[in-house]
Image (cartoon, rainbow, N blue to C red; front, side, top):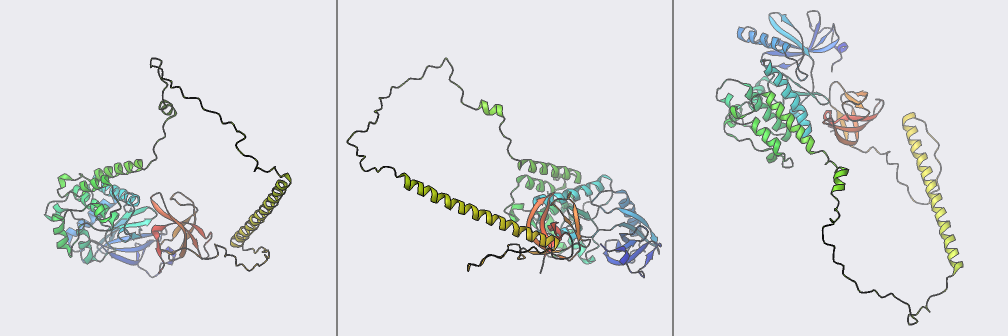
Length: 466
């Protein structure tokens, strides 16, 4: 995130408060700028009606209506509106600042991560539908991963205006292509297509241009997930997607709230199916033992066995080859084994002591920069292996988030943040990933002045070094 104090002083100042320093792009009705609220010292976004549209009264009234609607809706996945007004006959609104990677750039997601993001997206769309106000267009390009496990649904300002219409046709419901009026089921279709894309990395309906994509929605049957991701076989999820992407709107889930409820049910069932089987209660285990034979049952028939002959050694068996016990020889063998055992024990003790001293020396050197004296070992012509931690092993990754990435003492969204690592910093992967709170975590070491220099980071904001 841009430091407010670093904003050029000669940047335009709106209402003596908002310092505008960069245009991010254009949406359907407004140009979007990055700005700083100098009164509250925070980064914001300025949505200013496009200059080429301001003379069209119908579009002007539509933009004013969207500003009012945006101020009424409230959801963590939607931008919060801070202010609105008009400058030089151009309406504008001020919202919270949001930057991050579009979900389109993340590729194939795990089921857990895809459901985590979809529940936020569906909740935002359901909030807008319940309040009967418009929501931002649904597209993987319009959903930004702003922090660990958190997304924002925004307008299409970060895309070229010529590409926006083609991008949105991939999520356009078939009935809209045939000219029917919009309805809640249109968004359900788009959400189903988006979930399919997050799980497979492929948009199920595509074409060479916008006209071809619209035509495909009317004729193409969306394939099962397993067709594009053979290792993922979840019949319940396939059924949910079939309900969401049915060609006829009356055969779909009616609105985003119903889609969200079905998604929650699937998630609960999936979590329950992965739990360990309950152990058998003690009482049932006792009852499962064989029961004694009832008294009314006939007694078992006893079969007499022939007597077993007892072996009696006779003089015919020769024992003359056996020698008398040599007690002196036995005593010498016992003494030799004892000496060897003591030598082995002393060697192990010395090895453990030397290893402990070596580990302590390494830790003191790494964390306190103090060199402890090292013992001189005799060289018997054998080269010892190098200390395993001396070599920089592990993949090098780069921090890729403008605000800097949290370095945590343990994996998980609720753990302690021990440092914030700036964007572009190289880190070395030590272990992981581990999926905790539906976020992939890796333990890293930072070869810079950041202290402490080891901890856990979200893999979603790390990219391989070139």
